[in-house]
Image (cartoon, rainbow, N blue to C red; front, side, top):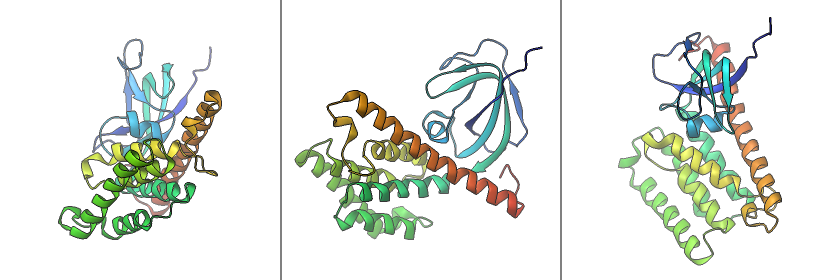
Length: 239
């Protein structure tokens, strides 16, 4: 008998989901149409996954259809779960700090906004005039640079990453993380140039993909580290 191949993936689940839960689908899995969804890496789950911030490491098997950034299968088992809302916020801020570093950005308002967000993120942002005013400056800065320096300039992207990373709407955490990561992915980590504007489009595409993989690996490392910490501290895996 041919041994069934098992793949590992990621997916978001609704509150109340437990580690060990298994799901089955009858039929042929088709991406964007039918089947049990998952993604190969965490960043793709942030972009494509189901609603919420309860992230699960899953095992998929049976009939599996694999796309560029998604998978659908006939069997899916939840191995463990971790709540990642606060982690995603921190990751977005780190994306902002990397953008500042990559582009050698000198405008102190970018880092000041990140520092303020970290200081006040556990409070009611919408009642904090200092945070609101500072973030408004960053949004205006990003817009001004897009109009004066150029929409695709590294400086505009750096400001854009920080603007997305410090979005105050708690309902849009995943959208903001994806947008911050995507903006960061166009910046070369050593030179700060916008890789998508290179004349050699094949090289540009390869560099962008390399950047996205690096960012996804960094996020995956943070998620795995949090899960290990929770296991070691004795917290329930599904919490």
